[in-house]
Image (tube, rainbow over all chains, first blue to last red; front, side, top):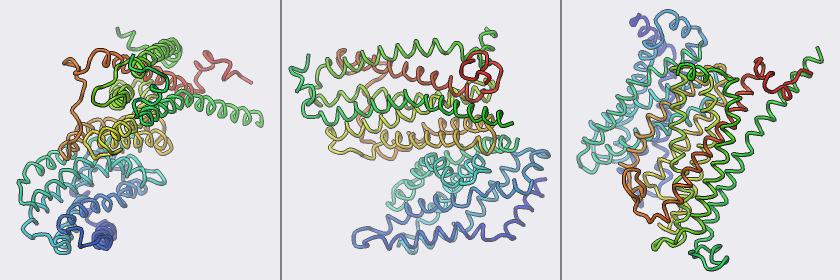
Length: 218
Length: 58
Length: 252
């Protein structure tokens, strides 16, 4: 059953690569346009790169996320899964696949950000780890909002309202990690908090998501 | 009693603007909270009226 | 005891009993708010550092407290709804929400107007101010859930979904607070602790306590008042409504 679900997600990815490319294009453009708004004699690019990237990740991952379960509901797949295996496994697999789908492009984007914002390359490993944790948390919170707004006409606004306040701690600790790394200070504390929040979110929210989906399809 | 005159009370030692704005805002929110239940009553009445009209047409 | 518990399942019983409670709490709110605010704004002595400006405290502290307590109450009501499926709890949660949102607004505005003469600026990105701001967005999100979700998933499911949102939010509130504190702290430490005597003379903190009690009573009063009407709206076609409100629903 897990194999079948994974295979399905894999096929969906290749049928519609735009799902994967859309957020990442937005992300890249946001990051590259941002310096145009700055007077580069007054702001230091290296210290701006990481916060800008984090905010852009937040926005671009939210974009289109309301479609996460919509397709499966339209085709009746969600109902089928609910009747047969239960929704929890489905939600977990969906989340992991979606996270991989956004994480892979992020791996490509991060070195570009480091390059364009003149950040030291030595920061890459820690930043990559922090970015992975932060994006995982964003995905699971956004999926929660997507489950709630399933079937609503204009879900985007409500999703942002529901998700962004909840993501404040993720943003704070991810940003603090990057700042510490760039200042060559101890960064372990911040990233451990970030990891703790991501773990908490991944252990509790999939359950909440599947119960909301259960309610929505009752 | 900390105030000697009414004028002193209004001025709040020079901070009158801040203190009274907050009090005014509190009063505004209080009135809004007290009045807003009547919106629900109005909604209920409108709904009942609509249903009655529908029934009469039938 | 179980009989007492079961009564909460009856909408009719709640509707009839809450009329008297709401009146009692309304009078108590009036009494304590008048007492606390008149005492605080007129008779309490001026603070030697902050002059008369500190009087904003008599609105700021209760509203900031109630803003958090109300969200917690909504989450607890949500939990009770999910576990015991008591019909009245989601309606109570929905009814108390506007009061909580108003409290956040009042706390933010009074904080800004207290901060301006004290710190020289209306807004600072301080931990408590910032987390209160995000609390406001949590309220707005919850409000949007109550008003939009019934269209997509039906009323009872929407109530349960909103309960889940409130619980997720209330788990997050301490984390948000902690993270924002970690990010920046400028604010003076809390001036009132329940476990120790406050660092204020009795003539200052007694009116504050009266005002806090007044806010609590106001919360219960407004919650019950709204909940009765929301219950009526939700159950408009049940037989008990015709029985207790014949004038409103009355036949022709």
